[in-house]
Length: 92
Image (cartoon, rainbow, N blue to C red; front, side, top):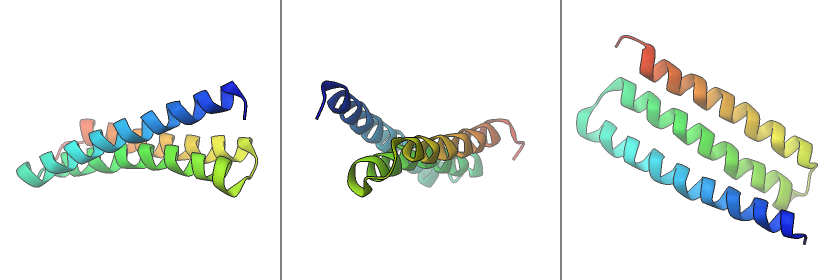
């Protein structure tokens, strides 16, 4: 395993941990306040975090092409960001 592979694994793990914390905190805020915007924010961050997790699984565990892992992560990141934008700009 190359040093670059190890670096990517470490960075993806940090992304997963930090994204999980943000998702958890947004969910706790949603539970406390009950705002639909916070629910959407939680979903958006959850999708971005899920993308990082699935990309790692596709690349390291399943052993499919790295390009496919990048596509999986990118699709979920785009959807997650769209949901976050929706949560911030839609009038509830």
